[in-house]
Image (cartoon, rainbow over all chains, first blue to last red; front, side):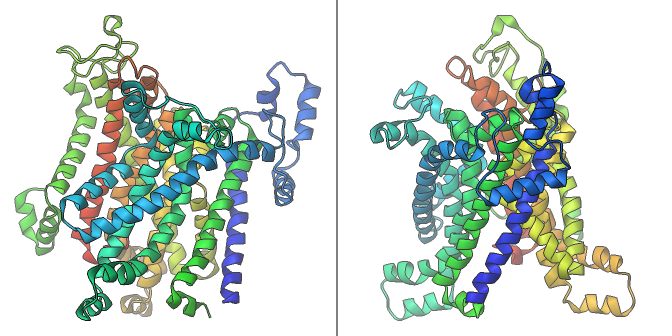
Length: 316
Length: 290
């Protein structure tokens, strides 16, 4: 087992290094000279030179990469060009907001997605199954930014129940946080829920046709025990992967939701950094987000072994 | 798609029977795709206006006999812009999926067949690309090509290449163990011939399904980029652009922002469901794998 974990960890480290190369290259392909963009076209030659020196822009690209990556592993992602502050500070400021929207959405969608999937599978072909399938099809097909706008129109403008945009931190005032946060959270969880529900439904249906379920039924077990003890346990294993993959969707989704509801989180930080050609911020954000995704997938690989003894056996 | 053609071979007949046996939903979605392509091709014939024509007397007008779905903030006909928007979506959706399929399949095929460290390297790079959220990946890249339809398609294509590499690679690794590959090797077939003449046709069913679904994904990505202002830029009538422009006038005329979203949703859902139906019709064994 130790060897398996080491091997997975090794692969994760390689992927993280590749991610760093890709995010670095990606950002250096951005058009425009960051020095000119930051200082304006009127800036003197010396100022531009000093700026280039400060951000190592006058060094060869490969050297720039190595300076950046060695600093990154020491926890220093460089300084933001527009905010003239460390990128890590910018991230630390914005991160709690993104988490306070993304995490509840992830939890809500996982719980209700699994529930919907089970109900859908048990009542296959009935009204409730059709309803859930219909809603999850919409959840997967509707653009998140549009769902946000529709939500604002119906609940904000027409019914006047919820605010149009804005954000209050849960630590400041929890009631206000829920009041402002409920719509972004629900909209984000809607698209996530759809994927989880679909996956759970198809796994449940597959498992229910297995021999051991028939045996359990033939032995006279109560239907609820068959469904929740025997079928669900086996159906949930692949759902873990889906939830793991959702982490990526949460990141992309919070970008949209933050943009629509005007929340100053990581998403809006990236959008404004891309538009302002803030190399260091874009590079740092892409890197941090991707490393996070890789690590989540690593943990999920391990989780697999803990929930499924068959996989644990193959580790040896 | 005529009846006669379907009767020609048993396989084709089975294909159409299974494809359309999934009830009215699949038929409806197939209809949506046909209508979508038709509208995209014949947009200018379907409306008396052009998407850029402004009529200052009907700014933010509601639906009327003259403007069936009303007008936007500078008096452009919403229906006309929706019809022309289908063109942008169709072109980006198809172009990006085609070029991603070509590149992704080739890389996946070669890496899977050659195997060894080449395959490991390719797969790790693919993993790394997948770790970066596609929307952020395309946003950064799209700043280089802002507004350019062809450029945006290329950028979106890059972000969906990994899905083809993964799929083809997995297939080829299991396919190359087959006896017919060994046989082809023994009679001295060239490696390239084995890859493209023997292995590729066996990946075709999965490729068609992935392609169909990716067209939907690409249309969604394009509209998202356009909404964020880094994809297709105004005044080109792209659905994402329309939502973002209409958002500012949501209170006065909600139709401008809401209708394009419905179009995006219908088209994306249609491609997903038709992809599902294709999978069942082409190869029932693929169920649950794609």
